[in-house]
Each structure stands twice: as C-alpha cells, then as structure tokens.
Amino acid sequence: MKYMLLIYGAEDSWTENERQECMLESMSICDELDAQGKWIASSPLYPVATATCVRVRDGHRQVTDGPYAETTEQLGGYYIIDVDSLDEAVEIASRLPPAKKGTVEIRPQLPTPNPLPTPRAMAIDQVAGSLSKQYILLMYAEEGAWPPEEHAPALAESVGLCRQLHDKGQYISAAPLQSPATATCVCVRDGSRVVANGPFAETREQLGGYFLIDVANLDEAIAIAARIPGSRRGTAEIRPLFPLPQRSADRVSTPPE
Image 1 (cartoon, rainbow, N blue to C red):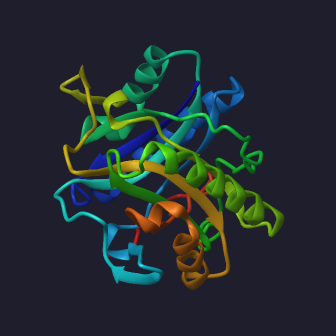
Image 2: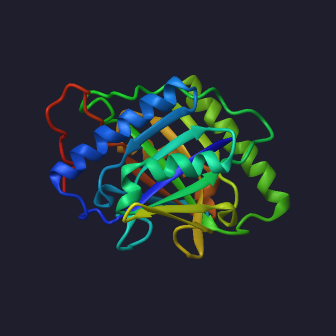
C-alpha cells in the first residue's frame, strides 16, 4: 500500500544545527527504506512564503502569492512510501525526526481507474541546487466538491495530463489521496508516540492529491496547475522542493526566509 506522509510543523521551531541533524537523519532513514524497496520519494519544501496558489474559475486563471492557508504550522516536507500496512507506516512516521517537533499526517493513496505513468526515480542524496526546478503541486478542495458523475471523468483527465507531462519529461509522480477521514496523525513527545485518527487540520478544504513535476520555471508550473481539473473546484498550491545536501557536506544550506 502506498502512503503519503505529510510533515507539519512551525517553520521557526528548528535551530540551524537541529535542521542539519534532522535532514541527515531523515536521509539515513530513506536509505534504509530504499534498500527494503519501501521508499519512493521524499523532500523538504521551501518556506511557505515561496508558495503560489492557482485557481481556475469560469475559465479564468487566478494566481496569488503565498500559501493556501495561513496557519502557525505548515507543510514542510513529504515522504511517499510503499509498505504492507498502516501499522508499518505509523512505525516509520514515528521514527522521522520532525515527529518530535511537529506532526506527521499519513494519507493512503487512492488507486486510479487507469494506471498513472511510472514514477521517475528520485535520488535520495541530492546536490544542492539540483532540485531548483522541481515543484510539488498540492491539490486542495472541499470534501464532496466533485459530484460522483463528474469525479471519474476529472480523474481520467488528470491521468491524461500526467501522461502528457511524462511524454515531455516533466512528470515525476502524482496520485490522488483517499478521504481525509482515512488520515492518521503521528507525533512523538518526550519519547512517547501519540497516534490520532483524522487529518492534521480540520478545515473545509483538505489535501486531495499531488503532482510532482520538473519544469523550467514557476511560470510553467503555474500553467500546468491551471490545467489540472482540481484547480477548477479547489486550489493548487505550488511549492518548490528544497534540495537535500550531499552526504559528505559539512553543513546544510538553509531555505531562504
């Protein structure tokens, strides 16, 4: 079963040394999962100040700077894993360093009627700057925003878009997520694991899926976001991926404020 692990926390809760140790420890966990065939992709994200939101209403594109939601704890990164059960996903989530300061929301991926393109392999150990043109498009919408008779055609349209992006070399991976009601949240405080059912944030609009793309610039990412059916009934938040350091690096560069 494939799961997306969403890392939420306050952006100012880490010192420089803590951030460095967190990233290096996380990379080691990814190494271990990759060796077991359970790791698909992961990346920290640049700060929410770098976010761009795209909506399409009545055929007109609306683009705004800033994150989809102004909250004290924001999405700071993600992991995509393939494991046997939710229990195993919870075990992995509780090992991730960010679980000690924030919350890891676990969301199972939703199978699509038509197969998506094969995800492009992402290196665990990225050279700083190598991900400067890679973005994650986070699709937010209200639960039930799509009538049943429109949901399947919209999903098929999204799969078709993924295939077009794949043919252009712009596709990394994508997937819809199961309902927020299926979410499980994990945090670790004073060495004790706390597991709760339900999404991290109780909001009208919830994350319903993602697209990972590789494009020339933000303008291309915006153009793609505007073509995703979900942007017609919800919001596409575009976040650039933050490059991981080489394992031999003495320090980790800090995302710009």
